[in-house]
Amino acid sequence: MLTTNTTKHKLSEGKAVYGLLNAVPSTWLVEMIGYAGYDFVILDTEHLSTNPETVEHMIRAAECAGITPLVRVPGPDVGAIARALDSGAQGIVVPRVRNAREARAVVSMARYAPLGERGITGGRTTGFGTIPLGRYLAEANREILVVLMIEDTEGLSNCEEIANVPGVDWLLEGAVDLSQSLGVAGDPFHPSVQDAITGLAETCRKADRHFCALPRNAEQLAHWRVWDAQVFLLGEDRSLLFRQLKSHLTTSKA
Image 1 (cartoon, rainbow, N blue to C red):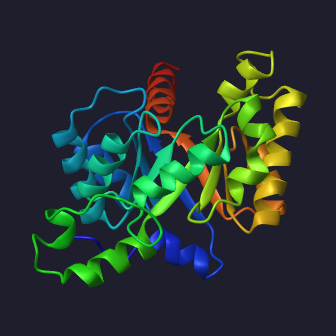
Image 2 (cartoon, rainbow, N blue to C red):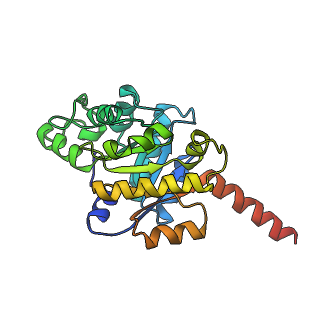
Image 3 (spheres, rainbow, N blue to C red):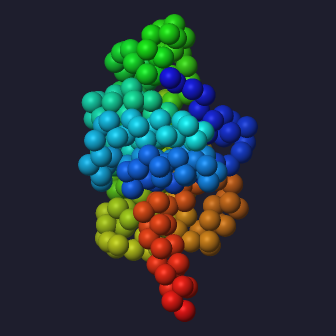
């Protein structure tokens, strides 16, 4: 059943929110991320071949732990977006958005009329029909987050128009893919990449949209806090787990 999006409401109260990208498809891990205190988790279906039933169970795990479940879909695909939201995701993350036309299409796929044309169906988000339909449609439009990733030079060139599309909530940087598009592949710390991300953040501020910072070290985290960012994606669980496992073993062998 669709519930209050606690992440969205914390932001409306001026609070900062912190999340992780989930790259290990496990209901247990999603639940642990929630109980660890993170505000949101992004379930990745762009680079993982997780089956839809598993994604739905991972969304349930997030609900159990009181964490906001978002799903990163492979692209601006109406079927992928519909399945994620109908499974109970409280938001979608769409990679490689390049222009306002694509942004408007995503909003239309993710929101009901009058904001969009998302297909209406019964199921778990409506409490299997126990929530009056009109109430559910209004709540879904209010609670669901639409997050767009800017990952190439075309998206950067059009980010002002993208940010100003009605119904868009956050813009998320994709520094690694940006580095490739900017001719410095594999170097997300390159000055040209960092300058592009700073410009993207300023565009979000002017458009009254949230910029989702993805700090890759303590210095970047401090920078975005001083900048007054409210949304922080603190990496992915896969790399975090791997580093901790290696560190644990190294310490034990010392």
